[in-house]
Structures are given as structure tokens and as C-alpha cells.
Image (cartoon, rainbow, N blue to C red; front, side):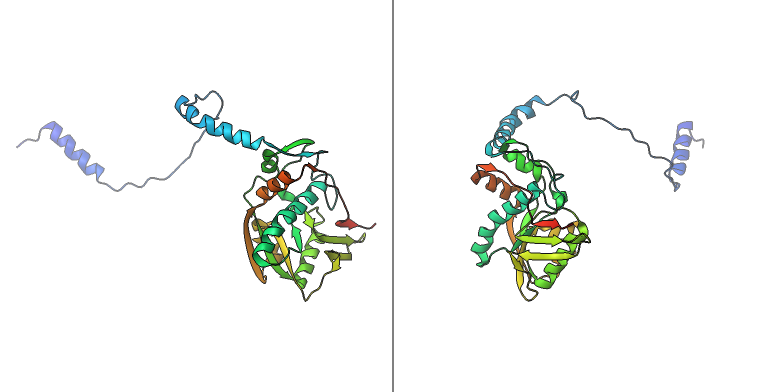
Length: 252
């Protein structure tokens, strides 16, 4: 019996296709595909999104307050006007919330220099301003720390030699960065006392090497974003005019 040619070819294909073959990756190639305005938009999607976009833009551009100057975190050595503003605003807005829940007051605030992401320009202040300064979703937390840990916090600020925003803490160092004075609410730090320190969840988790928050006596999550605290502060403050002051200075 003779096999027809097409049957022979099929058999041969079946045999060879059943073999286990090992493939090795030799090279990966890619190319960049730029996203430009040359891409055609979807008219139906644009029509649907447009009213929502316009509503959001209107909210962001709603004037809340006024700034008498332009404030940048680069203006100042160990404390800046914009950093002082942020720390003070967090205190002003968060303390009533914390006191209502616990019956206690926040003793001090510490934020981070790198968290200030924009300037406050002279002129009208809008919600967009707050989003530009604080584009992150960081929330305010209050940490209960004993006085010994507060001293570690002070040591951190001295080593950092940076204008991390603080409020209710006053720190004076000499030319060699030895502590001359460290006060909370104008009183010397008591190592036997518990202090309630407001910060954000990123720093509490060790961001910017602020590892002194753990361990602690207790933690209170206010479920209140720093950005929202800034917006609330703007809403009730007609004109902002923060200054560089003596909350962290060096005597030379």
C-alpha cells in the first residue's frame, strides 16, 4: 500500500512538531511612542467629561485668600515663611479636632522641608494653590512622645540643618550647633512628660529618616489631609503674611 504524498507530509509535520524545543531569549527591543496633541480625541468621551472638568477647574480656581508676597522654601536658612505658615496652619486646623476627640492639646508640629512642593505666589490664593504646595495625600497624625524622644527629635533637627517646618517648638543653637535653648510652648522640655506631636503619616512611617516616632505611647489618626487643612485655613484667613522668625535660629 502506497501513502499519498500529502499524507506523508502530514505525518512528518506531526512527528517534528511533537519534539520538545527549548528557546532562549536573545534580545529585547523597544521604541518610544510619544503622546502628543496629534492623537485624535474621542468626541463622545470629551463631551461626557467636559462638564466634570469644568466643575473641578471652577472649584480649584475659586479664590480663598490673598498673599501679600511670594513665599518660597528657599528663602530662609533654618526656618522659612512658607514652612512656618504650613506648620502653624496644621496646628490651627488640627488642634480643635484633636482636642474635641481627646480633651488634649497638640504640643507641637513637625513637617518636612521636602514636602513643600511649590511656592505661594503674591496675589489671590485658590484651592489650586493648596494642591500645588501639597500634591500628596498625606494625612495628619498625632503621636504621643515622652520628653526623652522629643530630645531625639531636637537632635534630628540639629543634624539635618534644614528648615523643616515646625510650630510651637523653639530651638536655638550656637555656631557649633550645640543646643542653647529648646522650648515647647515657651517651656523647657520635660523628660517625664508626654508631648502630643502632630505630623503626617509619611513622616510617622519613617520618611526623611524621622525614625524617632517609633516606639511611642499612642497614635491618633485624625483622618484629615494636610492639603485640606491648608484649604480650611485659607478659607478663614483673608490675607496671609507669614514671616521668618526665631523658632529655629543659630547664634553666631
